[in-house]
Image 1 (cartoon, rainbow, N blue to C red):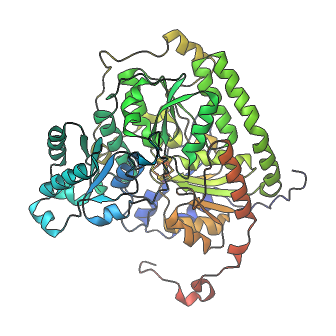
Image 2 (image 1 turned 90 degrees about the vertical axis):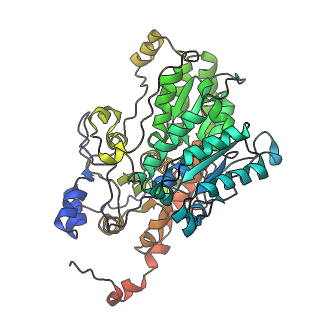
Image 3 (image 1 turned 45 degrees about the vertical axis):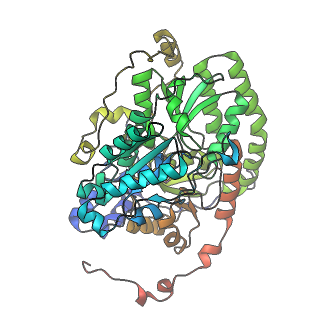
Amino acid sequence: MATATKKKMVQWEPADIKAELLKKYPPKVARKRAKQIMINEALENETPEMTANVRTIPGIMTMRGCTYAGCKGVIMGPTRDIVNLVHGPIGCSFYAWLTRRNQTDAGPEGPNGENFINYCFSTDMQEQDIIFGGEKKLEAAIQEAYGLFHPKSIAVFATCPVGLIGDDIHTVTRNMKEKFGDCNVYAFSCEGYKGVSQSAGHHIANNQVFRHIVGENDEVKPGKYKINLLGEYNIGGDGFEIDRIFAKCGITCISTFSGNSTYDQFASAHTADLNAVMCHRSINYVADMLETKYGIPWIKVNFIGADSTAKALRKIAQYFGEQELIDQVEKVIAEEMPEVMAAREDVVTRTDGKTAMIFVGGSRAHHYQDLFNEMGMKTISAGYEFAHRDDYEGRQVIPNIKLDADSRNIEELVVEADETRYKSRKSAEEIKALEDEGYKFKHYDGLAPDMDKNTIIIDDLNQHESEKLVELMKPDIFCAGIKEKYSIQKLGIPMKQLHSYDSGGPYAGFKGAINFYEEIDRLVGSKVWSYMKAPWQEDPKLSATYGWE
Ligand code: CFM
């Protein structure tokens, strides 16, 4: 690092930045947005309160998606052998078709096995269905899918008009399930408007997967050290790299929710002995329900970052407490790290001291900071599109979160211990011994405590604020999604998509870390964006003006 030329940090006062972001808003809007822009004080054991999981103010260009996207796309999308049938106008299916880069392999059955990911199933609702009801059309579509593919399961997803006209999708699916006898059919009331963001869709999906699939297969799978990996979606092949590492360590992954997964994995999830939770926001409901009903404890892990991967593996090994596993995990880390360190030492001469901003869904804005730290880069501003307060401040705030009408709208499944299948995986003494060693079960510390003092954390960032933020703080790289990509590049700043990874990945695990170091090194070292001018930057007359100015 001796040769590193440290970039001169742009000087800014966080309070001034916040004031600048709010300046253009009418007073009422500014008051509301102020509660979602937090200057991180990093107070000891305490972080400032964040307002999160609230409605976006109409008129603001949010980065968010809808509830249907969170249910159909995020949680159920990556599972290959369930027919995902969308009940609604065709656009909702078309725009959810193969856009998330959740990858899958052929599975043990090879290329002839069931894989419906590349299909786009829709009832293609028309005006007359909206007027006269779409239940008959849905029934016919389920029948057609069954006739063509004989899948083991068909999932139906409601889009906005379905809820508005009141089609009873749950009765239709129940009847079809009974009629077929060998195909599990169920529905999700995940209309786009059901919640304030994708987050509601995660919850709805978690509930139905738990109600209709988990626990369906009691068969004891072979293997030792059985875990479920919750909240990993195999974007850009992340899950393949994590599976490679698990296999090398001798850890058996019973199910992943839901990257590269199958129906049977969900059905067998209750047979695992530990839940490792990666994306807390999207899947914490399943983790809690698996614990209550079947006695499986959960821990938070992160496989984004090589150091974080090593930490997560050690945490899993510590839980099982067997020397054989502990030794094997150490052996794998020792084998994998030299290549990682060589790549890191190379890039860090150029990346050390550079700055990043990360604004993504509900967990990556935190997880990716580990990778940037490994490269000597600081995250100066970050935030989530749809996370809740616990994802910012830590799960200890959950009892203090005020339920509003929008959250009450989402069903809370009441789960009890299974009479025959509940089994404590560890005795109370074993749990206590682990906790005494500093082991935390059922906990997530959140994003804020990991960020430096005086960094700026923003919930539900929008178009105006992202452009202002970049103008004022001039990061070396901005990470977000496709909707932000081009406006950021037009400001002269390199942009990396952290939802789809553009065309890259994997970035998880050891090999993924190397990919990420190399890619970010190239991006922050490139001057090409700074040479580019948008037409309105060359000719200010083309800039828009606003009525309320
Ligand atoms: Fe979890 Fe995700 Fe994310 Fe997410 Fe998403 Fe995603 Fe995301 Mo896009 S489940 S919260 S709803 S880690 S699709 S794989 S990248 S917004 S930060």
